[in-house]
Length: 395
Ligand code: FDA
Image (cartoon, rainbow, N blue to C red):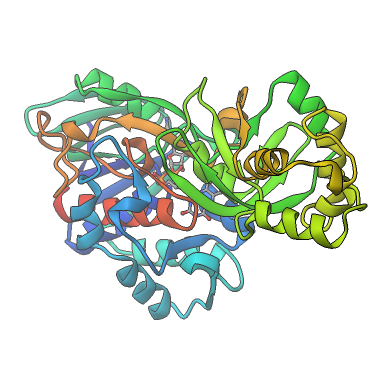
């Protein structure tokens, strides 16, 4: 005989736990299953162990989704302020960092503990190390064949996340469920991920590994971010690169303003007037890391000579070079290091008000499994909280 629940949630991550707590508070009998040993594994390692759980400024524009309006309803039904209230209720100390990002002062463990406390209801059961071997539609809902037993439910919530960080239990399970029920998918790819470079660039810039510079980066679609760029052994990283990676597709270039706070042409002209015999290398090394300038000279991108030997046209060209440094990434580091997965279950298939599949009553999706990913800065968790909350109100 199958055990019966009102709601079964697959995935005890951020969205699944939020959904379980909300459905449980409505008096629904809830079973959460996860194939991992413990809940919230991504929460625990997020934000360097401090979890950047939301942001003071949240708007639809902070999310990447083929339908930019889809996120609006859930984000207004459960806002960043609602989550901050929950944090306050559980007396979790938090701090604001740059760009309104909110982190735990102590540990991400507190977020998982808070969600588990919210789920600590007679109506909610959690089971770990459970594999779902099959799902079938029944008259009253769904039947799930687990490795342990058979369960039935009226509503099924898929909150299995994206593909990033397979080491933490990421699987394509949610996409397979969507496929089983005939729901369209938006092709998936790694987002918020470092770029790798072509051999020549990689070899030239590898020795700059560890050097960070403030930069303004632009994707070919005109999206820009301004943050630190970090050279790594494999290519380029740092917050500005992670952000722009979500707007980049293979074969495209990105344009980097390496001196976003400076009019370089004017600065170089002033330097040439005051110190005509100073070398280009020494002049630019006052503005940018010396090793970067040396590498650019070694590559033949710049010619090192006294400033007085540069004519105005050459100065203009050099200023343009630094303000529009163009890089053609070879690719990204992929799901191994990506923070999120772009693409997923097509939001056209889902009700933005309830997260229910339009053509499969009782089937819900929550969190990163769908074609919604946020910017760096707490937006991905906010989407997990908002979509999990909404699914929990209706499942
Ligand atoms: P999530 O991945 O959290 O949970 C999915 C759950 O489903 C997991 O518990 C998994 O084990 C389970 N599961 C998967 N397949 C299954 C199967 N077949 N059967 C059973 N269970 C299955 N975001 C942010 O806003 N601020 C931050 O600071 C960070 N930091 C960060 C760091 C790193 C290293 C990564 C990889 C990611 C982040 N993120 C982030 C992104 C954030 O972690 C992510 O968007 C959310 O965890 C998504 O929540 P979900 O609940 O949708 O999936």
